[in-house]
Image (cartoon, rainbow, N blue to C red; front, side, top):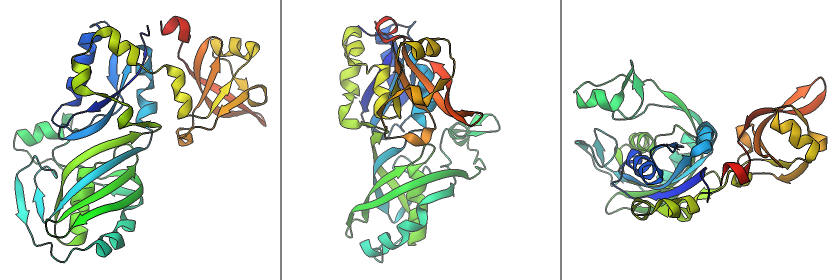
Length: 311
């Protein structure tokens, strides 16, 4: 039975991400390290990646994976939180909005752009969270942050209700609430995020996840059986297999020569700049580098031996 690995949850709408982390930690035992690889708002549902044991060292890596969301955006209404949980700030007509017009403005949101986070968000302002300041009645000045939107697909629009369905492929740090707000302003009607579901993070999909309600009632043994092993990262990262000699080098964090490794998989998230090396001592993360004019791999982290570490 594994003690470290990756747990995929399908978080229910209305459940806090921190509650998922706390509940899983309680079930697995308070001494077990449990972390997340990017939270979801309580009003959102979908894929939440939890990292258990030594896998908590992968948080920054998994957070860097691209994400896919299915967003429901309500035209004509703006709110204080940019989603349905906030106070209504304005109501404006949206009868001029139509699918062709939406598709015309979507390309202007693609690529790298500056995005101002919602006033009620986890962004730090002068050492405090923006949402904590908002609860105190303080309107924080939030600086724009760079985000990358790779794809925006309009999947539905109801002209009677003003409800828009949008599929979003984006980088970490993107607030879909801010996208809804900014898109509404571009369309001249205002808008807020009515519902959100995260369907993918890197190679993993929400329908692979254990429903959070089921996880909350599960036994420790059941959750440990549900953990994905660390070598499952080969679905995401370019991966190589090392022979016996190179495995010893991995164990000591020594650099490796690419021409002495066997390519295993190209991975779906090569933009992280990291590669996975599978070897007799377990799994290691390496980064491409050069030694003179010789391409090599430099060790970033050893994640331990699967049979010993994960048993």
